[in-house]
Image 1 (cartoon, rainbow, N blue to C red):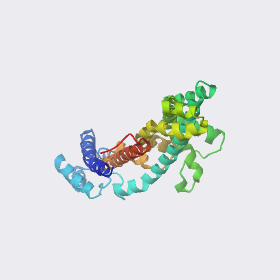
Image 2 (image 1 turned 180 degrees about the vertical axis):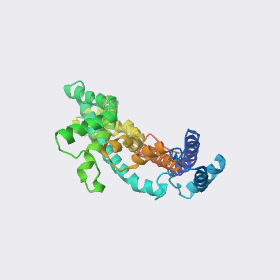
Image 3 (image 1 turned 90 degrees about the vertical axis):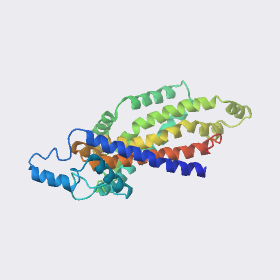
Image 4 (image 1 turned 30 degrees about the vertical axis):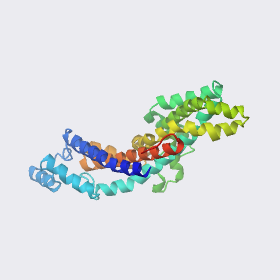
Amino acid sequence: MTKYIVNRILGMIPTLFIIITLSFFIVRIAPGGPLSAERNLTDVVRRNIEAKYHLDEPLIKQYARYMFDVMRGDLGPSFKYKDYDVNYYIATSLPKSIVLGICAMAISVTIGMGIGIIAAVRQNSWIDYLTMGLAVIGISVPLFVIAPVFQLIFAVKLKWLPTSGWYTTGEGYLTIILPAVSLSFEYFANIARLTRSSMLETLRSDYIRTAKAKGMKRSAIIFKHAMKGALLPVVSYLGPAFAGIITGSVVVEQIFRVPGLGKFFVQSSFNRDYTLIVGVVIVYSVILIFMNFIVDIIYAQLDPRITYK
């Protein structure tokens, strides 16, 4: 296992290298540039700004310079936000996105697995049909529709929760609930469906029949034996799901005014802020790769038949 972990960590390096390289060239090949919106710049001022940020150099030389800076942990200056560099904006906004993502994932896993287990145990009952119908709605309705609907119902009509904001801006911890629930809706639905189908398959397996024949209690069969086997596909889904929740929070952060990384990602795309775009892509890629790595380790712990050499 130790050798496998070391090899996986070393394997992350070329993966990140490819991602950074593709991101660097794609954003620069795209039409426009960080100075496109500045229409009143004279040619002399434009050339001076390009020289300051090395935009007048050949693309290969810019790439080599950027890769050297990245290896030193420097993601470069922002072309739009002049006060601080990219490292500062990512360091101050990423924790807010991670808090939102963790809350949304906790809701997704808790409710999704609970509903999935109940639906499997009560197969073909009204509970099964109701919960799976709710899951289908969660998968079918896009996030930019669910979030405003929740905002309208629970904030505007019922006035139970604030319409927007974030607890770090002094607006209270209740501001976490609506964006977290909105963001978790799709993932809870997928987890519920995965848990139900996996639980049904596990409950039909031979070792579960043996446990029933021995007179073991139903609760012990479900939570001690069946649940462990049913967790495998759910765990496989959680790695990319967590990364997806962090990246998918872009829409939720815009709707609920959460000062997370999504705001900078959207604005940097419009501004052609090369360094900020690539910096955010690097952060999202690291999260995705790391979460997949964690999932592989947990997978081996849940299923003793899996060994990594």
